[in-house]
Amino acid sequence: MSTYGFSVSGSDGKVLVDADVLHPHFIGKFSHYTKVNVPDLLQGPGWKQHGPNDNKSNENLPNVGTIFKFKIEKSGSFDDQPMCFIKPSSVTSSAPLQGIVKMSKESNHWDVWVLSSADHSTAPKIYAFAPIRSVKQHSTVWNDAKDVTHGLKTMTSSGMTSFDSRYKPLRVVANGSIDSPTAAHTGSSGSGRTVNLGVNSTQKSIRVSAADSFASNDILYYAPSIAHACHQYEWAGSGSGWHSFKRYKWSRIDLWWCFYRMGYRVYKSSGKMYMRGNYGVYARGHIYDHVTSTSSILGSLVAIVLTGGAALALLVAAVADAGLFDKAAVASGGYLPYENGSRNTESINFVLTRASYYD
Image (cartoon, rainbow, N blue to C red):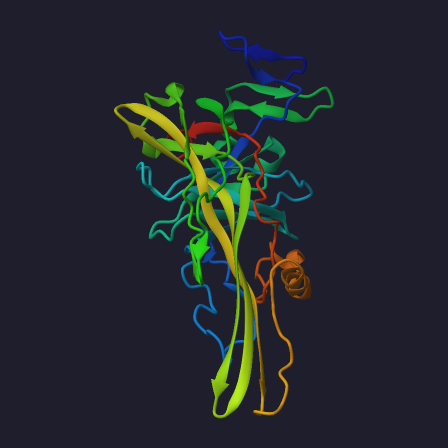
């Protein structure tokens, strides 16, 4: 069974097994250890005596999605990044969109974040795969098969095991590519101090005919969340008047923003399998300034007018710290992660397999 220089192809000519390729093997099914939401990112002086004080929080902004966090143990001296498939929490055409938005290597595990576009009572599961050398460190999977005496095993020219049929190698049932949607939000972004940045993009939908014969709740998908978008809405206003025999002026400027990440769902309609993708809200923020000036009847008022452009640039620069944006515990405060209208338009390659192969 042990050899190198071995390759098997299917009837379509695609390689199924190659001794020189370290094939992914099943290392386990994982549940989340916690769920979080990126906290509202808010920066501003709060209530002022003169001028409008409404919507100094994140009123009218769309709700952020939920991040489910998973830990996948590292494999001894090997740092193989696992290939993580999502078993979604729901498989209807209106199910939350879910995608892996972060993978980070910690001291003894991989931290995996799955963003769900809506808070859902049932969390997704992660089915993880890695080269066979990593399987040994996951004792349950290893012990279940190590005494099996038959199967197919291949080695690289250096003698490292590259494929072993006893340890549940990844079985691909379908694959494809899905485009990123249009801008996450189009049309009016707000009026006055009422903000409108909800996702209204047309979702992308791909037919996956190779998976038509499988139940949708048996499908696992691998589809990294690469596509992103950022949109913002700005408002500025000023005014003057009299109060308690004093003249006053006020000026206020606001910038609300949302940062979106791509998520996916699989579902079946009329016996046909579909892969669908669209944006979910990862984070939202509001940066503003509000200044006032008062004087006696005979005194002079300090000229204060906050306007867009330069004033907003200074406001953002004063609080910006995008380096905090992907930390496990995002700091409070205000910052803008990307420029308005920023969008990653990369197409996403996806792979489907079945949970029943590994349960």
